[in-house]
Length: 222
Image (cartoon, rainbow, N blue to C red; front, side, top):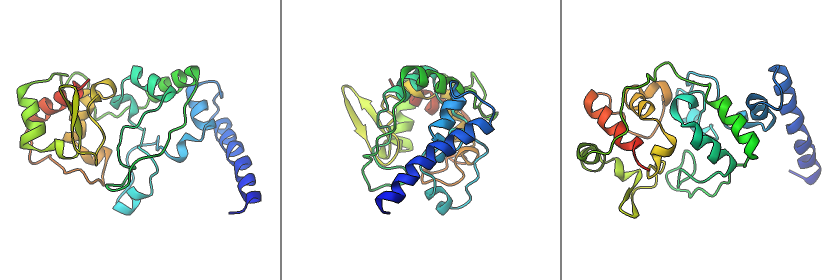
C-alpha cells in the first residue's frame, strides 16, 4: 500500500469510529463511546454469544472477545491494565509458535476507568456468582500440575520463579484479573465462551468438585 493510501486510511478509521459512536447514541466521554472512538471493536467482540464454528473462524479474530468481560475480569485489574497494558499471552493470539511482540494501545487514567466501567457491564448469564472460592489448596495444585497437566501450557509461580508452558495465557497472577466463578464456568461450559479452541475440553473428565477446586486455585494465583 502506497503512502497516499495509508494516509487516507488513517483519516477514514477515526471518522468511521466516530460515526459508530454517534450511531450508538453515546457520549465519546463515557466508556462505551471511548471504546467505539478508539475502534476497539475491530479486534474485540462485544456481542455474544460466541459465533465461530470452525478453526478458520477463530483464526480471523484479532483479539480476545469481551462480551462476557464483566463476568471474567476484576475491575481493579482492568483499570490498571488498560492504562498500562502488559503481555498476558507469551505467544501471539491464535499462535503456538510466534512470540507475542504486539503492543496494546494504552488509555489515559480517566479513559481506562470509563472503559473498565463499561466492560464490567458486559456479563454472561452462565457465570453464577459465589460458586467457586479463590483458594490455593494441595488438591488444586495437584490437579493443575499433575493430574491434568495444565502447567504444560500455562505458567504459575513456584516460589519466586515462574514454571510452566507459554502456549496459553500466563496464569501466574491470574487472581488479579480473573474471577474464580468465570474460570469454573469456562471449564464447565467451554463452548459458550470458546466454541473452537486448542485447549482440551474437560467436561467429561473433571467432576464438578474438581472444577471448583481447580478454578479456585487458578483464581488465587497472585
